[in-house]
Amino acid sequence: MASTNEITVESIVKTYGLRHKIVAIDNVSLSVEHGTCTSLVGPNGAGKTTLLKVVSGLTNRYQGKVSVNGRVSLSPEVSVNFQFMDAVENILYFSKVVDREIDPTDILKKVNLLLGKQQVYSYSKGMKRKLDIARALSLGAKSILMDEPFDGLDPGASDDLVDIINSLKKEGVTFLVSSHDLHRLTDISDKVVFLKKGRVCGLRDLRVRNTLIANFMENSVLAADLLEQMGCTITNTGKGELHFIPDPRLKTWEIIGNLISNGVKVTGVYNETLDSDYRRIYHGNLD
Image (tube, rainbow, N blue to C red):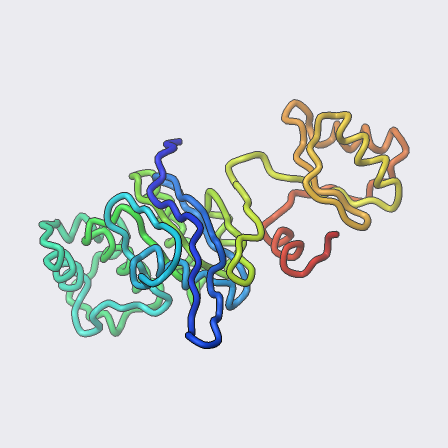
């Protein structure tokens, strides 16, 4: 995997208001590597959309530094394509704005959107999302920012969007995405950044081995000691459960067997998911 960062955000602070300042982004730093997808997660008001606007250049009054490699294109939650033009007319228009010669058929093939003269106003949400990406490609964007791309899509359209994003990543296109759809983010993301009240409050790298969650009836202290003796890394502890990264040399059944044989009453072991991360970070079910 290439280590070149296409997007680097350093100590960004963004406030609104004069007399009573509202802090939308509070000292946020992150990076997005070439050909990868980093996703922003958090409740409404966490600062996700504001951060996308800062990176895209739509918001330019902020503290800190944003570095981007090449052109960046933002696809907002509501599509901004011309409604009474067809797909080809849209992407040809935007390519001419930046003085680029493109093959519209080639770009539309990349997003599986080959239509005749059907105007955009008649498109489904899924088709509009495809056109958003096509527009970004017509502009020559190396990085595509998307705000809630899965909102309102049926399962089939969501599957198509996942396939398109993953295919473009292989071609070197970089994505920074904001979404509430944790399931779909798991399908496209390399890293997930958790935001809360404008601050980064968690980071999950989905490229490393999954963290496991073990539930116990009792002896969780003993369990933690045994896990560390087995070379596992404890990442979080809470009442009746432990989150840990297993030693890659061990199978999960070996870990469970060792715990049980040493008197630990294990009631369940399962993979940590973005859902469990979300509950832990935002609903505080762990200490």
